Length: 177
Image (tube, rainbow, N blue to C red; front, side, top):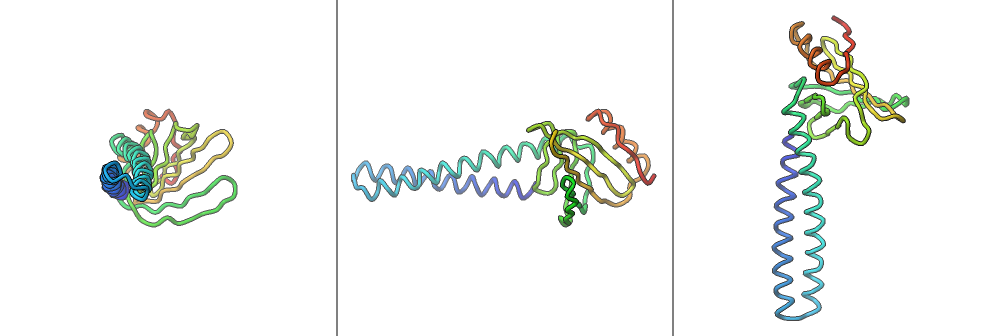
């Protein structure tokens, strides 16, 4: 979340700066009427449009991250994830970070997996004392992510199972209890 917020601030600053330079370039080219200044201001207008477009995309990601955090089912302080894509079985280690899981998606540090958007649906949940496995995808492909965490108590585990069932309609499979 911090990474998304930093990118948002950086894009806002860059967009504001290029917008200011565009206005300065447009004002100077209308007064001086030189081709060189017109080309200079045109470049800044293009950069402004690019930065504003990127800012809007990053703001949408920020809103999705806030939605996931505000409606979290599970919050794992430090987690290690192993992703598995389709049937290829390619596994990768993504490092240590915070993970938020909600009925709207998963926030893995700055990576967002949205559910019920672009036909991506949560298909299954497996919960153990030290891991959560989520399978998600569309009709053509299924992906899965295993989120490893420290052991949690039985009451907390049952609360997470109940919330998954209530909020997503999926009955989690419990393992290693």
